[in-house]
Image (cartoon, rainbow, N blue to C red; front, side, top):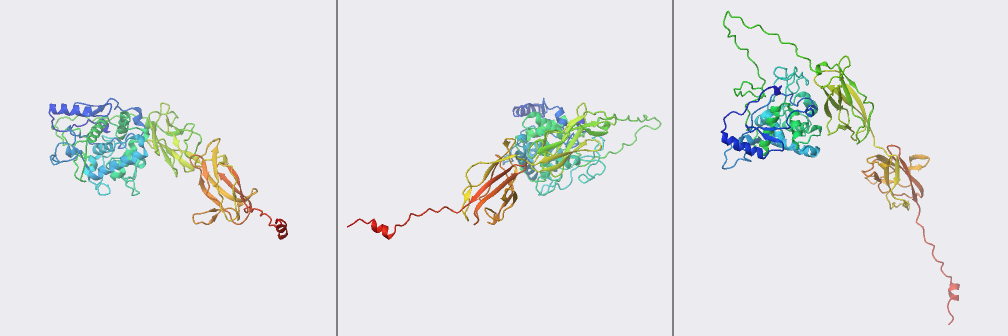
Length: 570
């Protein structure tokens, strides 16, 4: 794996006096907890891998190869000027191809809305993009952000790297035997399968598209509730991308460099790195991670007649904990049920066991939400990975129900070895109310052919608590004993002004209130009933009265005789 290889330093000597000045400048402006070594590289006291860094599948890249070139020690110019040549120290390296830069900034903007607590800087995506692919090979992308040629890491066949058996049948990396890191952000296919995003809105999740890859990288770095403004979480997120201390230091160096200034350059004109993490010859090889290396056998230069050393037989590798897992077992998860919008009360617990039933610690179990649901794990992700404890038990993060009701599946899979998956059925039930009350006791009356002055408003509660977002139906019924829809009397109007006596798809608001539209009356007089029902069984019947307006009794008109008798005598 990449973590096993030493990192090549930037070629070229730097005067001691210049280096001292630049290191002092870098140190003065770094994030809390970050220092620089004598080469101007960033390090951090908290940058060591910790248990938290292993909450996912090892690395987005499969710990594949990466570029080790370091940024210039001089601060970047914010943009080329008349007095600064584009080739001047710092300016060239600070330039980021236009489409690639746009993809980073748009991804960070989306994360600022969807996961504001993550505090993802676009410069972090730029730093990782630089280290992983040299900013998509210098911005070698089309107008839509798709690379003009595939960017592939080396074959992850166990020869100097991890062994990752093919997971995509070659769909992304063209290799149906083993996996290879793919695209500008170098995702391995097995990670892209769950972490992939559609960043440019074309309906396709393509690891070779810089908009898709940048957005996927942003979500990957922001999982697990990490706050990247905190140095410890920033380190964990970077290490989860490629679990190497050298990788962490390199990314931090570019992050700090880009934070001090960068500018847009035309696509295809970016500088290409020259050194990679597996360049252990020390010769400054320009072999790029985009092309797998091939080894050529050295000719036999031994002196004739001399005995060559006997070949040694490699010993069998010691089985890893993952190699010993035979199956997965549930650990008392029982029934998974939650009301829409609420958290599930139980967490999924899965135990990795040997064939003999012994728990296996320190192996990874991936939990994936499957099915037509908007439920997620805490943090908004649909995939989470946990490491088993000493008893072999891995516990998934809390499940959060969405608004879609019904059943879905949470699938538990062992990472790194093929064993049967373990499926858990989870159920989301509709929000409910057990009581409905009117918010006013004003009598509801109307004259024939008129409209009711007051609108009906009710409040829904469940076990005394406000019942928000509860579905309801309102129907003008024939009688208390006959709940069928009435064909006369009061009515509602639809959007076209037509008579409607049943309203569906009603929902209480965040305060549990539901206000019905205006009611109208036809020419039929009498007492009528409006029945409102909700999910959960709450029912309220409201009385409506339609009566003719009362007319005042006129005073009697005096007769002619009475009038004459009341006339005073002359």
